[in-house]
Length: 417
Image (tube, rainbow, N blue to C red; front, side, top):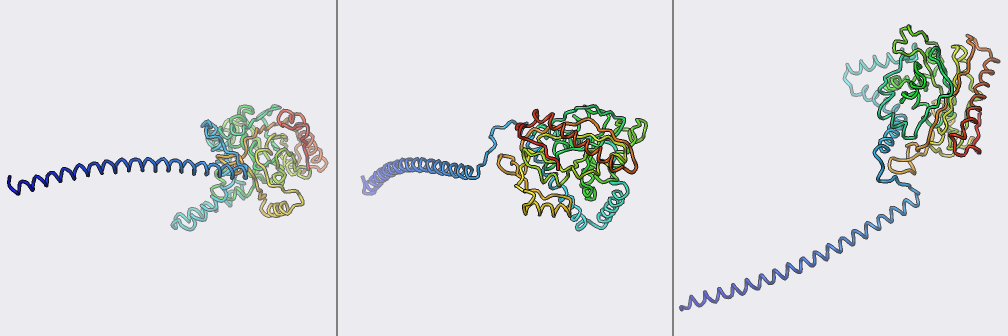
């Protein structure tokens, strides 16, 4: 064997030894790495678990301080849709005026000359149409908006009922005076506004309409939505128009198959909404006789209506008559016709705070019509007589049905101011 071969042999031997040692070291290193990774993984899991528990404790602590009552995770989809419908209703009610005004300003600023010209034509039309015709829209509006999947779920959210106590024949028109106003008049708005299916079954041939603030019909875009929903202006001109409509089936205005209008009026208005607190039924009526005069001028029967549970769907920040808050609210109402209420409701996923109404049963009881004699110039004594009949009818209705629809009926009184 040559020297070179011996050296090669030694080199191979050393390489084998080095390779064996390297494998053993790699194996040891791999084992150590696995153990360390396993230890790190266990430590990480424990730390994450600890952090999660600490976070949960903090959430529970915050919730306990704030007394947040969370909605259950496993809620039937039907109830989720009902909550969505209630949220849509409230937010449309709150933000539709602002959205309409924003769109008007936006279009005036950013449309081209033709777009601006068309918008100005539309604004001019609104002015003359409302001045001369009080934004009249005959018929039942767009029925899809007044009876659909979403409004059916809104009715079921509370739920809302409609109770018929006397027959209303479609051969004459009716002025339905609805109490109490509550925060947003949800019961009557649902039954006679956005979900009229039940009304049409109980009172066939009679179109339900709701009178709301006159200024709403001066706001572009918003007025069109309200008209399609069957809302009308509460102005004297508008009410006399609808209450004076013909009941003849052959009249062109009755081509839709209906021969009568029932116009609901929330007599207490913004003033009564200031009195809306859970369990308290306070009506603002004693000095409100304008609706009686309109009924007498048009010869329209007055139908008293009472919505039990209307005051329970929202809480309101305490605002006693002599408080600074009430004075501020009354000041704003005097100039705008709208009361700036601070209401408390629930949220989409919790029951403690938010702007959604609570799930409280609302029952609108529609009473018997009070007939009136038609007079072009109502006599003061006769106005007072009919006004007192309305008050007596509301008192009677409240006492008759409160034990059925109010939990603490014995301690709940009807106050008429």
